[in-house]
Image 1 (cartoon, helix red, strand yellow):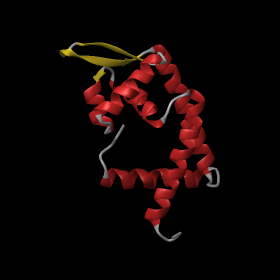
Image 2 (cartoon, rainbow, N blue to C red):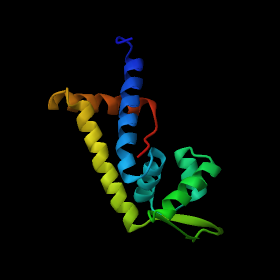
Image 3 (tube, helix red, strand yellow):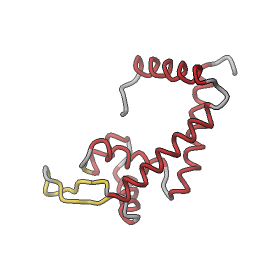
Image 4 (cartoon, rainbow, N blue to C red):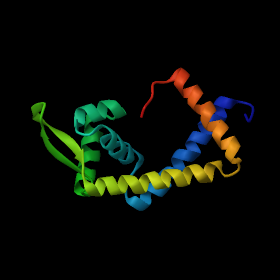
Length: 141
């Protein structure tokens, strides 16, 4: 299996996800919570429906995620300026602080995973992964 690049990519992704999930427990959030905070920080006000569609999260779990984040004081539901029947979600200061901490943990995971590689090899891997993803997938930034 070590000769199968696809297998190795999946294993590296699994390891990265598992390690990041483990570190996020220190912030009392999960991967989906991180994705929600990240998206709100980068796109501003979004409805739950829009956010769920962008992240591929169904309505019921999305409501649970937002309830959890709101109870922790990380996001806030506010009247949606485009639709009076819906709420828009906004990242509050505590949510922004949590996101900054989570991003620091993401850098820690990357440093741990890539530690066996030299700085040059890390840069090369990053370049190759960007080329690969650019040619096959739509950006998720």
